[in-house]
Image (cartoon, rainbow, N blue to C red; front, side):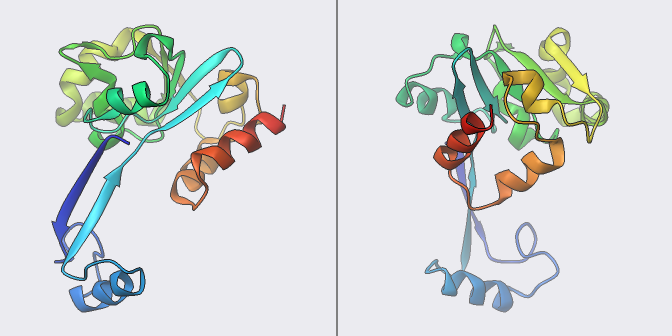
Length: 179
């Protein structure tokens, strides 16, 4: 876990294109307050026999503490897969102007890296991580296989996985079974 934001249910960030009342009904059905939307920023940690992989790094909030609670240190992370180059996915790559994960190779699609380099919000992050990024062609099936020698899952599958109801445990179990 990295961060949490509580925003008003006003349709500006969450439920865009729907009325606050429509969004409120969905929130109510989920047992949540109907006047606010709670958004969580999380990263996924995958421990493999020879790799420690992070999928996204959040905004740089509580990720370091969460990793410590999971028994991992920043210098143990070998690979970071960035699903897309928004600040809430890349913000944790840098801490105090330095690489937050000094031994990690940062992997992202070439299109996302090109977008990041043009995004003014990411300029300071891009400057720090520039020499540690390895890109891949979007849609390739080598992503996790290349990173961890595990199952071949492409970028779009990882994006769908992050949005699904799978827990980190079920993802880890499935990845390790697919050797």
